[in-house]
Picture 1: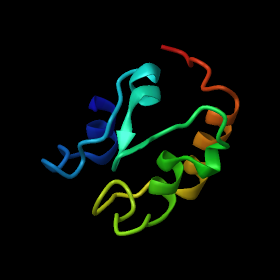
Picture 2: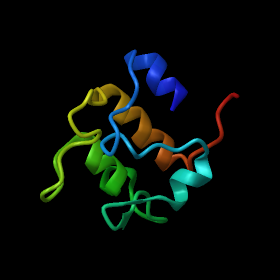
Picture 3: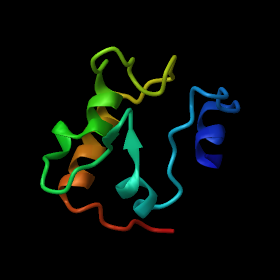
Amino acid sequence: MERWIERWGRNPLPGIHVYYWNTRQELVDSVLSGVRAIEPGVEAKDTQLVRSLARTVLTFGRMPLRGPFVPREEIDEIIVWIDAGMPEGPD
């Protein structure tokens, strides 16, 4: 969350920016709107996480609610990372 605050220059909105993960495992275990964020064996572009970042899903708005939204280039990086098996990055 500290990186988010540093990037956007403000604190998250209570109850709106509640989805964040400090570790890879927290992301793997997370559920968004009742659906696992990342499903084993599912292409990244079809995961709940990527769909939620890229567009409105059903009645749920694009994440994070009210923005700032993740640019398409960064969503593409997330897709590549998930499809590569979510390798650990540098500290």
